Amino acid sequence: MNNEKNIEIFRNAPVPKAVISNVIPSIISMIMVLVYNLADAFFIGQTKDALMFAAVSLATPVFLIFMAVGMLFGIGGTSFISRSLGQGDYDKAKKISSFCFWTGLVVGIVSTVSIVLLAEPISWGVGASAESIGYTKQYLGIVALGIPFLIMSNIFSNVLRAEGHAKIAMAGVIIGNVVNIVFDPIMILGLRWNVAGAAIATVLGNLVSAAFYLVHLLSPKTMLSIKLKDYRAGQGIASGVFAIGVPASLNSILMSTSNIIINNVMKNYGDMAVAGLGVAMKVNMIAVMLLIGLGSGVQPLLGYCFGARMKKRYMDVLKFSLAFAFILSLIMTFVCYTFAGPLVTTFLDNADAFGYGMEFSRTYILAGPVIGILFVMINAIQSTGAMLPSLILSISRQGILYLPTLYVFTHLFNTARMAAMAQPVTDYMAAALSVILFISTFRRLSRNFDDDTLSA
Image (cartoon, rainbow, N blue to C red; front, side):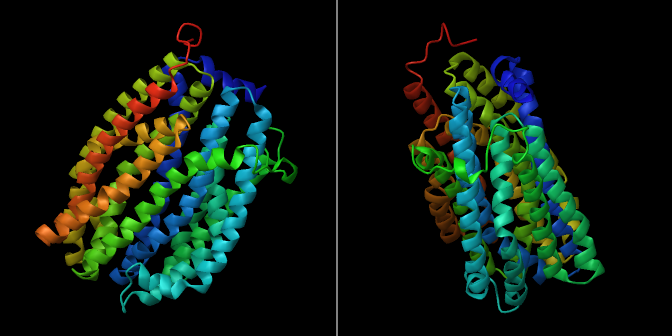
């Protein structure tokens, strides 16, 4: 009965209620992820060692790559499951869920072994210096132990929203992050384990979050399954998940890659520039994470409407979401630009690092007004199951648009600020591209939708 009620919200609830009931838990989840990230940075900052902060900043892109694996199955699974539920195919939804769980688990175990064995060369590769290599290697080696739990958490914090369980998805994120935040000060400052303490707290948080989701998925409260007997890679299931999951994860992987590249660029200006950039990314994350939450929160609703061929409702949901995103974008831009100084000071008190952090924070947030629109459009494209447009957008924002822009800005101006400016310039180009790709994709895929009978 409860599951049917969740689906009923997708189908018949007033658009503002349907959007807000899905978006708010997703935004809260992202706020908790943000708090966890800021807490890690805050407590590492309390050690007064900028090299430790630089090391954690350098290791973060590697961590994000494995979050991208979770996104591959999580976002790919969410899009496919929500469309299957819209079509009334509940058995297929179970098979998709089981495929995501077991395949993601195997990838996580292989990844853990790989990172543990290659922690040092990876640390050099992400831009560690002779001074920060020890901290970077230590952090990576410990965090690697939690990769299977990280992947599980990222899969089901997304997939559960596809069946309307946005609050349970939110609860898993909150529980895991609270565990992390509680253990951060104990292990980093109390026990003086420094970056090792931050890494252990992260592993514990992901372990608890994954356990919470497993308890739900083994209960009768879900339409989904993680039973091995439901596992299928054939019948179009693997290809259906990968069609959207690969572009979504590529975006995250390219984001990590671009972070590694910009860290190596900033290394030319010294470790304080790297530390300052790390803080700026944390400040910018305040706006970005909320807007990612808005975009990902609305995707299951859009996917259901698309699968059910409800064209008018789909467009009403999209319009409301875009307006919501634009207003939230403006608010967060104002907050992050105006309070950049106090936010940077929270993490660093080194004068040189603060100067870079302040400058970079205000540079990055210049893209704030369009970030919300960009993330809503990304999720709107993903909701249709269209692989090629999703792929084009994913490799454009942090790849074929960002990298040439970074190269040009670095070589023309040769200043740290202009290297940072490449990101907001790219975001404006990516937002424009996302609108063009969505209009083209939706017009093509919705030609056969019957507006008269399917618009309720």
